[in-house]
Image 1 (cartoon, rainbow, N blue to C red):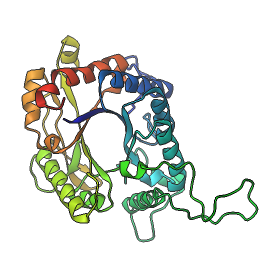
Image 2: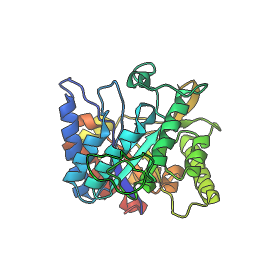
Image 3: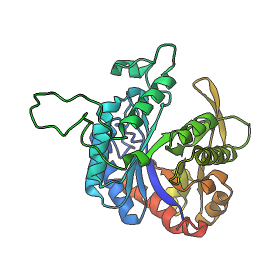
Image 4: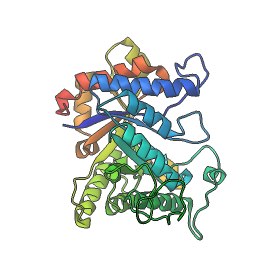
Length: 338
């Protein structure tokens, strides 16, 4: 069995070819797709966060709305760029969204990826620590966020408050008990996988990774996951960790599918991210029986407990629901995921 959800980057553009032409469109359709995914039996609705781009940027209003419209499906992010975040304000927003959803929030955070502008986090009022990098900034904000999720009081109460205070130091409210165990870190290297396990976070590994051995992407990613689990065990954490991977997977069920994805001859690609050599995983597009055999050979999918299917959200809710349904009904059962 494997949890299967979708991951939307939340693009919009004004072209006639797009079914998502405005920010309003993408927000409303994201909610509608989450509702449809729950009805189809999917397990998760996840959203990517980017700033200074025609994509989803402020996740918590969206997560709260999805939580209010659904009852079972996990809702989350993959990922929130912590370089841009105020950990204190984020605690309030995340806890509120989690409480609205009755504890279904699975919050993916990370140090972030290359953005649309140079040092965009500076416009939000943040600077790296002295002698540090923007990656250090992201991890610093992440650690502050984790510390606040303990729910311990830290603020000295006003002796003459507007409303009566409970005894002792005060914490931020609302506070959602249990959210700390549902925080994930987006890891692109073996070193950050180790750090993630040591910090007691679940791990998200996407369709790119630093090329650390020259091996195929899925092999390197599988080794990263095993290293994470080994480190988790050595750290002495008591609960079972979770690991997700994301993939572009399309079952070719009809002529429309073949028109959109049937010509894709995909393989791993090599590129450069933040001056590091990175390997980008392939996409999968084939008839269901062929797809099943191809996916059997993906070592990283086998290692993960959660699979996030990246969806072409600009093609609209109806088509993306079809994409999800095709995988859930015609591929997942033959792989033992359902």
